[in-house]
Amino acid sequence: MTRGAFLMLFLVLTVTQAPVQAQHRVIFLGDSITEAGANPGGYVALAADSLQKLSTDMVVQGAGISGNKVPDLLERLDTDVLAYEPTHVVIYIGINDVWHHFEFDHVTGTDPETFEDGLGELIDRIEQADAVPLLCTPSVIGEDTESDSAVNIRLQEYAQISRRVARDKDVHLCDLRAAFETHLTANNPDKAYKGVLTSDGVHLNAEGNHFVADFMVRELRSVLEL
Image (cartoon, rainbow, N blue to C red):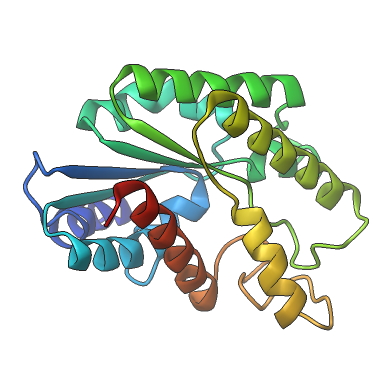
């Protein structure tokens, strides 16, 4: 079985156990963090399990693709998200929009204006489809959130852009960056680059998946009034 087939099988059998026309249909939209999150033990799968214990009338899906940035989400929003008629869409994006400015020669990041405008367009199109968007701030590139490195400073700027877009569009903000900062301040005294919530400074380890799943469930419980 190919990896793609396995992920699809997992999503069908484990993540989406409620009827197709369930009252709550939640899709997590994002990059490789969300793609991996659909695996067993990933944050999407863990959140799905918790949410479906709170409401059996619930479908939860992951729609993450490795390397994606805001322009990529705009290109596939209709086919990968809106085609499934979600009631709620969690947008977790921004890492690659920043990271690709620094780490990779063959790709480029997203400039601030395009990032901001793209987030706004995502929100508008999701709302036009009668779904509720929840916008996350990007989490971390390196677990020393007080680092003065150029990439960390840029990521903080993009988190601020996400906060501004959520405020201006009057949508629910999931301030994942702030949650990471609080946790890492208390649990990363040596200011290590990785190993607390991530395996490489970006992608979630087991503890990180549980941390993000718990965070997402709290945010969604508030919005869904569960």
